[in-house]
Length: 112
Image (cartoon, rainbow, N blue to C red; front, side, top):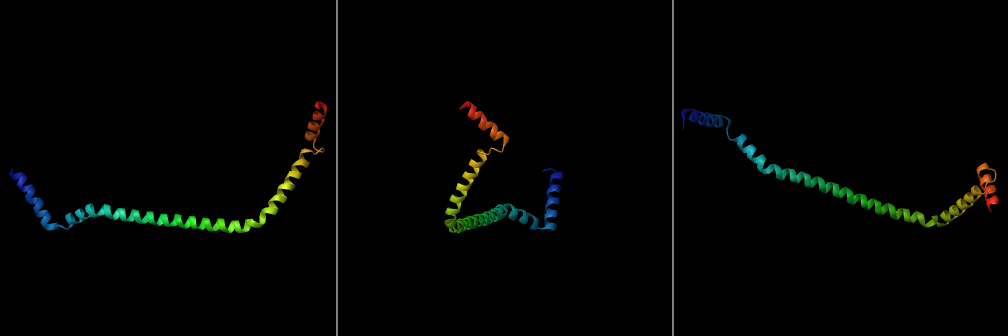
């Protein structure tokens, strides 16, 4: 070894003696335990999201059950509205006050 190399090693040893081994130990601890800590936080976040999704599905099931209770009495209303809307469509199709419908009706009478 050259005297320069010996003086560099001696300087590094002197710096480590002054600073101590805490920085080295801290870096070693962060490198070894850091990934485990990150995995714990990521897994905890995923657990919270999963619980939120499960709660959302439970709320949706409750909503569907409540809607089914309300919808039991709506059958007659839906049938009545469908009948009325069919009548409205027929009236609109046979509206002789509208010039376009009158023209279509006259044209079909001429063709027929």
